[in-house]
Image (cartoon, rainbow, N blue to C red; front, side):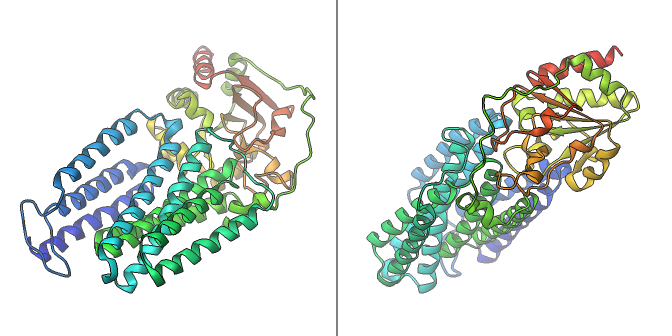
Length: 468
């Protein structure tokens, strides 16, 4: 294979990656974008098997790679693990899967860079050494940090921020140690400095994520995804592979932009999101033994309320994903629309456990895209809304974000459902949301609580609506 043909095919794969990102920017084209990206990744992977040579030299061989059997075995093992995991994972577990796969990608890039560096030995250029150090640091942080986010989302550990006395000083000392170990690798080389660098970087990844909790975890997932992209780009430089540089740069850039947008949606800086737990003031105890009255209703009560509404805004949250009630919600919306009722969905940028979680969930049920309204678009309409139906969401509608300085979500812009004439909460229990903050809106006289599994209760609401 000539070098020109190799570069041309590589360009096709790179264009596929760019088109994939463009497609993923909107729910209507996301599926197509995902398929285009998969095609580009397939082309890039197959291209490796038909190209060998270095620094511009290329020849075609039927078997250009060493250890071909091990490579095919590793690919097969990845397929055996990845395909069933992707097909069987529930929508509620998708954020954990994203975090886990992202971490594996960062760790793999770091390992590849280490192997290539050791193979080059004293022949490694200065630029390659710097790229290796960068890859090991960022890739190791991405790996260990993603494992902690996975554990938090899977509730294998507390979802609250984990802080301890002197924690900020330990993080600073660890970071200084990482930089010192990086300088050691650059000046001395060898296995031992690399081992120290990798170990300190793994520790920093853990300490970096531990202070983050609650609704901030999706932001960290996005940031670590950007880290992995930068790691892949740097490892591409070490391997002199343009495709890795392009793919990694695209992931790093898009992940950085998404992280910034999500931090803005939370109403705070990225630094405060990551390390705000160290400076947060302890909240006063709210009296755990106090029993406060709430107004609960039946599915028939909610159906009557909806039936006589002129405008209904549905606010989906993680509870909707847990109950897998998206299809029932779509059916209810269709019944309301048939009665001449205006129906919209209020989508918060950090609703659920990952960016775009609610958009993906509702797309599964073929909810019309024009009914999905972002926070800035839907908030001004709540004052003219007769019923705000909150399904499994808590933190993104919690007035504590505006009224309770010092709480973990203070400063986060919320969906202003309190402005609606009536608010209906579908909840399993009075348990707080992911951030662990009690929602005062639950005790508002105009709020009705409908307890139970969202899919079951919505099915009863739909049945009652059809009979009215």
